[in-house]
Image (tube, rainbow, N blue to C red; front, side, top):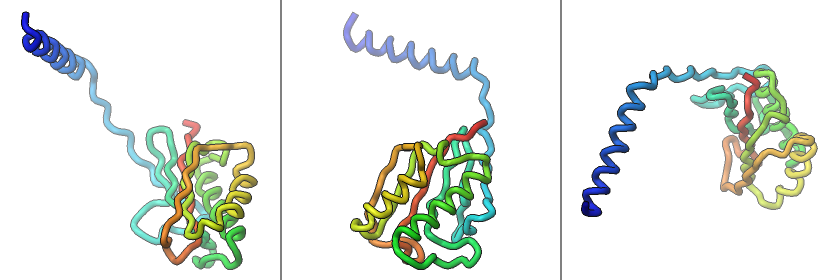
Length: 158
């Protein structure tokens, strides 16, 4: 038997097996997405949700340091801005009965690399013992000229 013929038989067998498996496995409808609306966090400033729950995870949209009551950026330095972002993220998590201990991944966007140490101090204190995976990205600008934005992914308890 030639190499090409053996390869053809193997590929044909794999395709047949996949077809049989597809026929024997009933298709499940996809889980509906759940949009999260959290009191205490600013309303979305565009066509998106504060967070979506799907597949056992909560995917939170990036939060900037907006005061939920006034809709304005908080005043002060990067520490005050980071505190407000964490307040907003905490409100989103609490809306689903979650906490920072459930967070598995964060992404931090900063407009100034020199703000990293101060942001990181607040981040470490607010995350507590939780140490999720994290990426930090320096960007040219953010919505409303915010100095930072943080988004996260958390596992749900369901």
